[in-house]
Amino acid sequence: MANERGYGSCPSPLMGPSLQPQPDENTKLLPHDLPTAIETRKAIEGDANFHRLGWKHLTVVSIVEAIALGALSLPAAFATLGMIPGIVICVGMGIIAIYTSYIIGKVKIKFPSVAHYGDIGQLMMGSFGYWLFSGFFVVQLTLSVGSHCLTGMIAFANITQSGICSLVFGIVSGLILLLLAIPPTFADIAILGYIDFASVILAIGVTMIATGIQQAQSPGGLASSNWSAWPAEDVSFSKAAVAVSNIVFAYAFGGALPSFMNEMHTPKDYVKSITALGVIEISIYVLTGSIIYAFVGQDVQSPALLSAGPLVSRIAFGIALPVIFISGSINTTVVGRFIHTRIYRDSVVQYVNTVKGWVTWIALVFTITAIAWAVAEAIPFFDELLSISAALLVSGMSFYFPPVMWYLLLRNGDWYSSKNFRHSVCNLVCFLIGITVLVCGVYASIVELVSRVKFLFISTC
Image 1: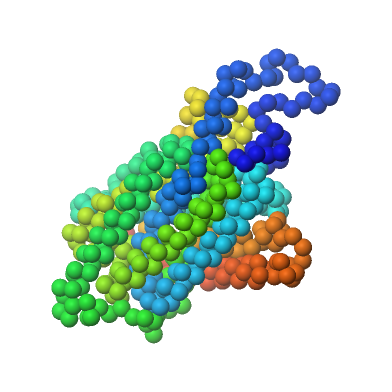
Image 2: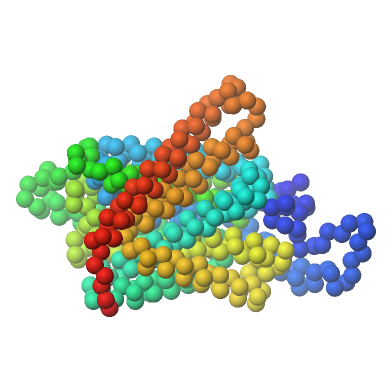
């Protein structure tokens, strides 16, 4: 039977056999077939090293992974949707994300051999499901890293106010993301999480104060701000859908949850983490979106730090550099852990505590970062990149896949029975919302991206 860490004496059908060969009655093992003493010791040490995460550190790691780019796009989303719809959608999506993450965690608890999001797909649909869910998982997190790389480019360009080609800033951003993603365990990254959280709070706080002072000193004062409780009459469907998709992107923490839980020493404590994370996220997002929008009005920019004025925005971007790169690098680590463990699941190399382990790990981190950098260079529009990622991938991973997980893997009895009916209704609502975001968000993202590309002037360095 598996223990609370999610591994046990039986080999996992998802993760492959253990390091120790499992002979049958007709097999005679030779000495060279057995792991060496060094390999065994490294495996024991590695396993212990990758199960040091408690629920408090999980909360910190989840905050690092979740609260970053989402917060920077929300004031502009509120400007498109209007104050009241923006707040309602922000709170509603947050509550749904907490519920669906609870479902994902319950699947991990029921099936301890689940190590990453793709393993849940295998439980649901066999090999096809594994590769489908794994594809969503890898592409979404890689796009997220690309978004952070793009934000880093915007930040450096804004801070330096120089004519240096954006390609240079992109390379610098990619190198920083690469270096911060080298630590392979989430427990190690949790240490940086406190710096990350302080960075985003300070950057948002500086932006709020600066925009408030600017508006108070303008003719008419705070009352002259042109914010609106409802969407403007000329807001197009595509712009509104992109704004909703950006709010959805802000709650893209469900997909990484199984990976984080796999390193917990007590996985069942995940409920405490997602509850704390959900409350913190909703509070920060609502306050950030509503206050900055109320101060700046319809002219609010995305990322929101650009709205603080020339000087203060440079200061705010400087303060935000840790959150831009630490939050981006953890997504690289999550993808890297999935791929590395998949390749070396039968070897001590997976624990990244041997020479081969470190060489292969760094090479993998470099590859993921390079792909993300290429994405950032190919789609140089912040809102559209977030929207594409949210509509195509987050809509499934955090909204319409979890209801299917509940129906196929967690439901006990008929869906219409008294004990299941409430969950059935909740999951149906989550599923329909996810599908709506998928269809409308993809269409709107394509329309907006094509519109932006038409007016893009190619600059030369």
